[in-house]
Structures are given as structure tokens and as C-alpha cells.
Image (tube, rainbow, N blue to C red; front, side):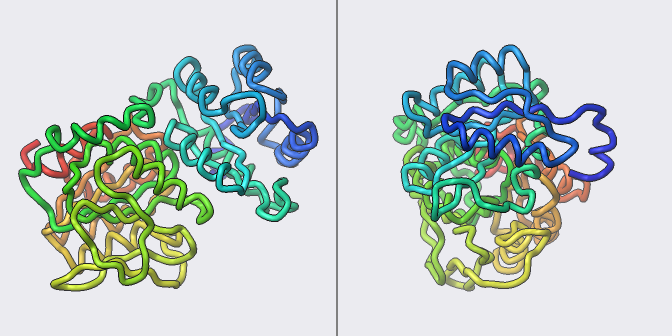
Length: 359
């Protein structure tokens, strides 16, 4: 959050913590209240208490441990998003079950995740202000303007069989590149849910911690027609396959000429990120040119804006998610302001524009 944004906010960010462990609740409260712009207005031990506090206190942000015993955290999250849409930060365990649950929560509309320590299962001793930063970012989400999530494909995996008939590949690109950040897992769920089984090879950079990337890939794979998997070094690209950046401090780029493949390489952060959307889009502009489509989805900051401009200048079809359906309009707004987006569309219509220039 910029200083200008902080100064413009007259009141602190109000947070409700939902966590079954008294120790964890106390640590979260202490960690957040080290800052002067965040206050924990309530701390609940379970979903029932959390529901009452959310209704009474109307917080700006909720932190939610979705692995609490005696409750279905995903069901609770879905009720929050349907009945009282509020930005939710998932506080996740490092076990496989924890990362799978977190990936599903992000697909249901949680705006971000905060990981417990891999070694102890507790919170990291010093997170260098990460949790507070995530809270500030989440507080910028305005569900009142955006409305609740459009739909939840997690509960409609049967749609995979019908997708081919819905989306017609009138103008088939050689490769598709997608960038997303805050709110991106939910947006990707909706976007890929409209992709046909035989879609062109698709490369995705989603800003997410490496420990969650495999679970996000599996969640997306279970609920869309194409195959979704983590990108691997020098992996040949195939139709009907979607390649997600591992998120492990390597940039995902496009390589090859006659035969295209993934390239993963170490380097410096670009636009503040590694992997960077700008790096992916730039490589696609150079190699695929007008035979590509670039899609920039919801996210904080401006990563991807310059890369989408490079793709547009190379003749590629370029699409940005609109403000009304973006969790955070930062990345699409930056691209639109540069004149990089040939089309600005709601998330539910982007697939149609991807495969049909006249849409």
C-alpha cells in the first residue's frame, strides 16, 4: 500500500481473526497490532463465533484458518462470500491437506493466503511484515462494487464435458499467455472453465508462494477440460495443456521456434516479481508475435502491463479483465492505461474473446 493510500484512509483496517488455537489467535492479534493502521476487532474460535462477529462488527478483512476441527472451512468461506462478501486471508498449514484446502479456498474467492511455518506448523517467528502487507492489500478489495464471486466451478466439475461445445475456436492462436495475482486463482478457475479440451498451449504466471502452486494446479485441473500441470524446464508445449509457473524464484518464459517449449530460469525480479508476468509476455511477444493471445487478469501493482504492450505491438490479441469483475484492478488498469489491451472484458467473457476476434 502506498503512503498516499494510507494517508487517505482515516480509520485503521478492522480485522476479525477466525482461528481455533488460542495461542495462534493471540500471535495473530499481536502481529497485526504492531502496526498503527490495523486493529483486530474480534477473535473467534470457530465458525459459529466467527459468523456472529462478522455480522456484528462488519470487518474490513477476515483471517481464516480453514483447517479448524469440527467445521468445514470451505463451506464457511462460501457462506461468507455469498451472504456477506468480505476479503478473506487464508491462514494455511504446510501439510499437503493444508495446501490443497488453501488452493480450493482461493478458487472460491479468498483473496490471498498466509502460510504457517513448514517446520513447526505455527506462524513464522518473524514474517517481516508480510501478514500486515497482505491485510492492507486485501482491504483495497471492494466486494460491494464488484459483487460476490460470479460462480463456483469447484462444485460443477461435470461442466468439463460440455466445455468443448460451448467454446468454438474460430481464430486459433498458436499459444496463450496469462498473468494474474490477487484474486487470480478464482479468476483462472472461471477462465479455464470456459476453455475447450483441445485449447492451444497456455502458459500462466500466477503470483503465489511455491508451496501452494502444485495444489493450485491440481485444483484447476480437476475443474476444467484441458490438462493443468506445473511447468517444467524445457517441457514441450502440447495442445490441450495449461502450464502453471511453479512460483519458485524462476521466471517462466516461452522458448523454441518451430517447436515451442517452457523455459524456467533464475534471474532478477522483474516488476517486483519472480516469476514475472512481464517476463512471460515479453518472451511470447518475441517468439510467437501475432500468433499469440495475452490475457491479464486481476492483481495488485503493474506486473504484466509492459509485457502486454509488447505483445500488442507484436500483433498479438491482448485482453484485460474489466474492473467490475476484478478483485483488484491494479494490473489490468496499468495495461489499459498504456493502451496495451485490445479488449477489456468481464472474466466470464474472456475465453470467447480469446478464440474469436469478432466476439
